[in-house]
Length: 369
Ligand code: GLU
Image (tube, rainbow, N blue to C red; front, side, top):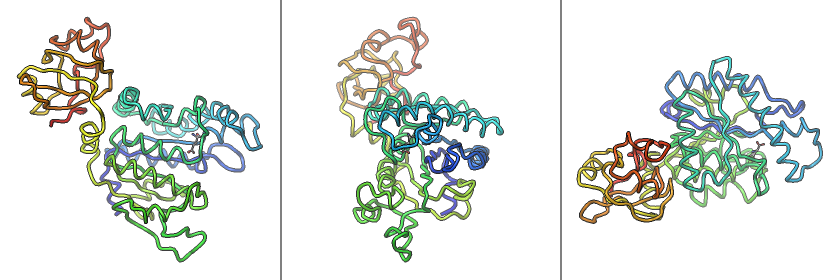
């Protein structure tokens, strides 16, 4: 089991406020964070890329603004605004020792739900990872319209894992994994080391709605559902000891939720099966052959643009004979696709005044039917 994490290529680590903020002083838990940075640096030396989803803004901002009573939503949002910079400051300090740049990305649930923003957020996170930075993602709490609930970052982390096709999501918790019953109420409760399917029986183990008593296990199971469906394994383990990633690779107790497809296969199934196509591109026979051997669709091979799709929408790709041969996500909207169809990719910038890459539909976002 311990080898599993070593095999992952792209890891999302979700860190909650309780780990990051010292409860007494209200200050960042610097020793813990420094050890986490050691952990991440080690993973990167082993060829793994790591993205962090971090809470802690509200807890840090609360102290900074002198808010001690129970906070209203607006006060939480104000606390998040004050605390987010402090949170990033603490990450920057911890990772500077390893000469690793951290990069803040604040997402709203919308960015993960709506395709166009989703594609842009994904491109940004991919670029940060390519550039060797560690993205630190949090919810954009100051602009949130709904109540900010404890545990929301579990779900956000699952969406981010899906977004970047991560193969492992680590939820650092105050408990070392899933038990058949809450072990704090029943020390004889059996530990569950591996979950292949999130059945109603598994969900029942996590307790009812708002079951904070089981360590927020319910939202973790919800997150595990989202991530495993997207081809990403999920690990719940205790985060409070120093260097939880290294411990997971060696000895730490943890519950693993297995994914039943690769992230890439799950992503392609999502494109093919879950999105309603908003338009179509009719391609020439050269482009149709190129797609069949795994190439991207370049504007040069497009003869006709149909529909009013936006960037990020799913579209059909149709061969000269009228047969739909592939489906994919558009990297340009229909208006711009019309302007660049038939052109060589080098001419895109001149035609549009900007360039969003050589492909109209990139091979990564394309599934052959
Ligand atoms: N986004 C919130 C924060 O930074 C935390 C939400 C959560 O812990 O799930 O404080």
